[in-house]
Amino acid sequence: MLIEVRDLTYRIGERTILDLPAFTAERGEHTLLLGPSGSGKTTLINLLTGLGTPTTGEVKIDGQAMSSLNPGARDALRRRTIGLVFQTLQLVSALSVRQNLALAQHLGLGRSFPGEVDELIERVGLARRADARPRELSQGEAQRAAIARALCTRPAIVVADEPTSALDDANAQAMAELLLSSAAATGATLLIATHDTRMKRRFARTLELRPLMQAAA
Amino acid sequence: MTLAGLSLAYLRDRALGTALNILLLTLGVATMVILVLFSAQLGERFQRDAEGIDLVVGAKGSPLQLILSSIYQVDAPTGNIPLETVDRLRRDPTVGQVIPLALGDSFRGFRIVGTEPSYIAHYQGALAAGRGWDKPFETVIGAEVARRTGAGLGQKFMGSHGLAGGGGHEHAEHPFVVTGVLAPTGTVMDRLILTSVESVWDVHGIDHDAREGAAGHEHAESAELNASTARGHAEPEVTALLVTYRSPLAAVRLPSFINRQTSLQAAAPAVEITRLLSLVGVGLDAVRGFAVLLILTSGLSIFVGLYTALRHREADLALLRVMGAAPRAIFGQIVLEGLLLAAAGAVLGVIVGHGVVALAGAAFDQLRDMGLSALRFEPAEALIVLAALAMGALAALIPAAKVFGVDIADTLAHAR
Image 1 (cartoon, chains in turn orange, brown):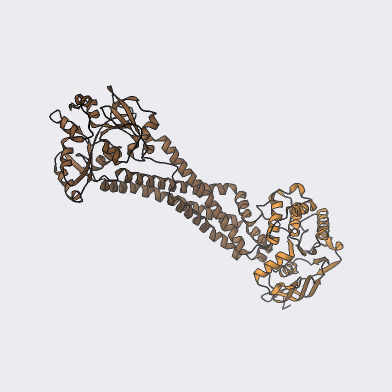
Image 2 (cartoon, rainbow over the protein chains, first blue to last red):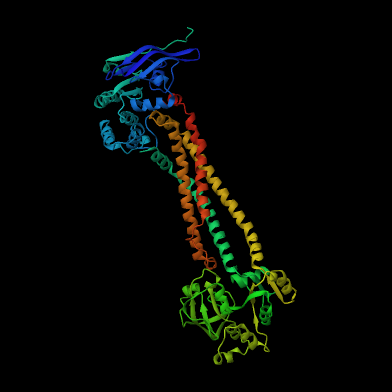
């Protein structure tokens, strides 16, 4: 089992942000995480990737209990297994697209593989923008670069948080296509959080989160 | 691309700020380096030239002026003293050596010094070519004189009255000739033209009976001869005497004995140099304080630069953490930025410092005469570089510590 979640809750004070009794994903089972704003999608992603600690319950990634590791070990597990794509937080500002990927590989794999980097940049259609700085890229280009960055460490899981919400229909479609084809090419399993229902028909599995009212209600 | 490479990339990304940081530090370090070079080389030069000279006897006036004019050959002499003083001092059993100096003329800014061969021996000079002086108007020139004037053996030249270059009327009727060239000694002697005391008298028309005798009988290298031949005629004088003690007793007795004589004064180089350095030292301290201030300012500018840069980089920090960089590694990356700035400033500062000294030496003959060399490195420079590096790292510590406070989830929540 690649992702395994049991009895997961996350509370801030009296307020329950997330309550997920069970969720699993096998290798290759791409999952769309749906739900309106405030339904706890981001919280779930933080817990899955070890950026946050659950109030109760357990998260297992590739058989390891992410939720009970110390911060350093969490960083290591995330580095090994998960590539993250965010809506706005895409690239390190001072580095070109190619350098971003090289740095990601250096941090994740211990060294960089220039051939692989170029191949990925080619795949996301940025071959001619490889030496551009993030601020010179359009929103769509930056998002594609971020996908390449997330994939270049050969992660088993790619987690994407709202990757398409800032894009128009055509670009959103292209992005979904790109995520799926890239995942197929690198063997990564996708977990995509979105409130964007345009993506719904492309994914077989969905996990729908509903906004939780206050615990007292 | 590594985290170290990322440090460089960030510095390049804000090139203007980086350049200003480096420039400021360069100025501070260069000022400091120039100070170190000046004071070390000047101090050493002062020590070397005065080595082995316990007392200088000359005409009354400022003791510092007497030392400067007779040992370092930089100031005007205080006046002349009777030749018989030489003999009187030589008869004193507590005195080891007396070297007479007769000043007054120069050639293209190089002083012509009438003295005895013991002067060359005192500075451990060796002839690189030719021989010592035998007859009046024969001269031995220092290495620097030979290099700068291009004069070689057999070269004839006219001395001009006065010690400054160019000025004064030429003693056209008395040409000097170069019979010897000295090897470099790194002392004041390198830039002197040495000749016999009688030559200087002759130039000025002082009759001492030596000229007639010089061709005939052997001109022994003994002062008694000069002194005795001079006696009875119109007051041959010398300018100053460099005295070495034979017994420590002389230090107690001799200066006060000489100073009691109406026309003479005795000055101890050690005392006067210390006085001079303490006078100059106040100025040096002020410049040093200014340099320290510059370096501290540049430290502050590195701090401010990094601090503001990091405020715009919170998203980057979170992303780096997401990409798997440990907080410690990112901390190191930021400190490295401070270190790189400091290293660039320090290295440039050392280069500029030496460059300025080289330019100053080229522009001002007096500095070159002082033996100021731009190619010598002082151990203190390593300390300056280390201090600059430490300051760069220190300036980066507080901004870099922010990375430990970054809550990735929180930053992400605001950034996305």
